[in-house]
Amino acid sequence: MRMLLLIFSLTVAVIAAEMDAPVLVNLGPKSNGVGTSWQIALNACVGLANLNSPSSVYSLGTSDVSLDYIWLSELDGFVPAKEDTSIFFKTCFADYAKGYVLYDYATQKALIPNVLTYAAVAGAIPINKAVVDDFELGDMELVQDLTHYPQRGGWRGMGALEVTEKMWEEYKGDTTGLCMMNPGYQFNNGTVLHPPLNNDPDPNLVDFIFSRRLFTMYLPNQCNPAFPRQHAVMSTIATENEWPKPIPVYGYDDTDPVLGGDMFEAETNCVEEGNMGQVATKGVNNLAYWGGKVEEDGDLQLQQNDEKDLVYDPNKTYVALVVGDGDNINMLKGRNYVWWQARRRRCAEKGVADDLRCFPLVWTISSQLVELHPRLLQYYYEGAKETGKDYFILPPSGSLYSYPSMMSDSVQEEYARTIVSDFAALDTRCSVHWEWFYSWGGEKGALATYFPRFSAVAGPGDALGFFLTNVPYPIPIEQFDSSEDFKIIAPSPDSRALVLFKPHVWRGTDTSNAERVLDPAYSSPARMADKINGLPPGSVTHIYLTSDGGATIDSVYNLVVELGEEVMIVSAGQLVDIALQKAGV
Image (tube, rainbow, N blue to C red; front, side, top):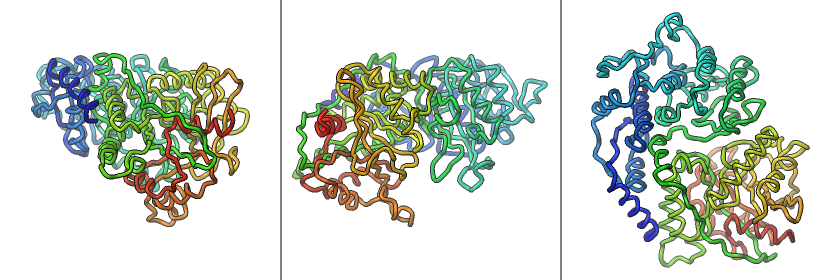
């Protein structure tokens, strides 16, 4: 960074010097039972405080608090002393909360998402009745005791399905969006359809839920048509609302895990209308704090590094290295920070050839950061200026983790417009794109309906690039011939061309079990390099890297060392332009 990041840090420090440091509270390490209920109450206070006084209270989360300290220092210029949490509770009760809501954590754990909705709408703090005496409530009003029977306004004896129905009927107009929060269902023990409630909810996102008044819910089979009542409630919620379409769904939906993945995590295939997409925010604290910077900082002016014009050489192999998982906000503030520091060190190494230490590297990054965490987005863009070789594109599938071909025509068109707008905001023209294996072809498939919409809504300009991944990823997209690296959609000479790159997934280096040994997506860097080196001359391709199979930033560097002289690493935009040259478009 040196100079550019120094300027950014100094600017932040000047702003910080003119402001009071935020109150710092500690949620404590990951807990269970009573401890989790206490964390929920505390983070609800954090959300209400930041709602009433933007960016005034900052929390240390339940996992890596060192990163919470780093981000507060790097992005806001503050290193405040730890505040006594009991003092903050008193301030919250006196100045921010409109009362409190009682529930029983032990017997009503499945209802905690509903409790959060109820309390957030009321502007009240949810308190576990078993430990209510530990709080100095003073004269704060009891809004409702949910441990009572329904005749007295409580939920005693009611299940999550019934309560969700009731909450939607009464409070749908008082919420601003949708959030999925698993209250503790354990899906990984073979009881997928009827999971036990053995775990505890993650309290880190509670501040955001309260600052946005999100309708928070979780039914273990809400997306599964085999459970018609749960599915009907989910369909009703997805359709009978005034929220933007497609609906951004915060948190994470880990219902119905199948073949090592979560069937409905992208949300688009959860209901027939296909009008939802995920913003993966499970485990992310302080979004209420950082969201308060949007108005303070004004419009972001993000600018990519220059992409040098290249001339296609049929004797070379062109490849873009794309770092995945940028749709996951928790990874952007966690894993990516670690990888980013390693990348900076590598690029600054002395005595190493330029093409081995600081080659072009493409990172996926969520456009949701514009509203959720603008300073994190700015941090990465400013850092890229230091290396001069880092670039950013949208993650799967654009503005939301979603399967766009499943959306209705009107939602598809609106979503395409949103992505084009996000392209402009992030100064990019490329995105990763995922679809289920059966959704690419046919009259209603992505190739025939969704992608051509961009030519209509984007207007004239440089070609757009989409890096495709099939779901499940081992299945090839049958619409691509074995010899094809990409397809081009260009409805007319005057319209924006699209380049769709055939999937090439690298999920990691861990081949510790037999299944992965046989899966080419799990490869050592040397083995992956052999594959690239063995491509026909003139190939134009990419590698989409995710870390769920053990890959690290070092894996990328170990790959590059093994590539042949005929292989040229390029940015995403350069790959698009080279593809057009190869095709003669």
